Length: 373
Image (cartoon, rainbow, N blue to C red; front, side, top):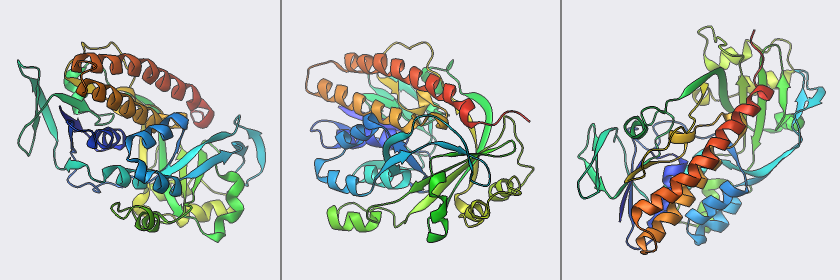
């Protein structure tokens, strides 16, 4: 069996990694970026038990010790603080899970996987024998038994497979960045995992602490894996009101322009951020609509169910997809299902929990997003 995965994000790589050690299943990844690290993808995220178990099940067991060494437990009260760090309320029950750095996890999942970069999909054709011929702008076509679109909210695969499914812009904008976690910011610990409510904006902070620096942990526990040489940091997100303007400022300066009178350590946190890792993003969602007829092309992750980041379930749902599809494809490879049946089983379940993930994330958005101004 040959599987072609379009998109080298966490979901697509987890699928390819999970199939890599299975005899008879050939999985290759096609990424439109010119290089595997062409874009920075290194912010922390929280994995719930399903997402974390999916990662463990998709990687070789010999890497489990390494995975455990580069994550941290998530535990936060989820307070609401004012800009001077005084407690003024609670968001709800504290959130638990496993915190992982996206860039580090991505490099782990890349290990041993065949990835073709500068491979922008332009379309695909289904042949009479049921195979798929994927066409790319700057490389030769690739033929596979299954084409998986794991290429994000602007999925080129989805445009052909389900053109009626399009992203919806919520109107909410946010700026995200990261700052090295030094002793200077120790006093901010109660703000990690909490919401700081300012005048028309919200600031969310999250700490990423490694038990062992990732590069060092890989050298000690899995020498065949190369992980980024990074240290502890604080990921910060400022959520703007719907249709909020950045007034043509840089992302970092736009955040500081909205922090007059804020606690000096909060301002210092933004001032000391890496400007190359600060960016403005919009919150767009993709809601699964009517299912297409199951066949040799399917979708995974944000390509079919992009959630609001305030739901904290985007990566988790993509990883769940990868593990579920991996299991069904292994059953097909072993002759317990035919390929179409395997894909149909995956899609039926994925549409259900994927739609729920989008709904849940949108329900949580108002608690984090400021009101219109």
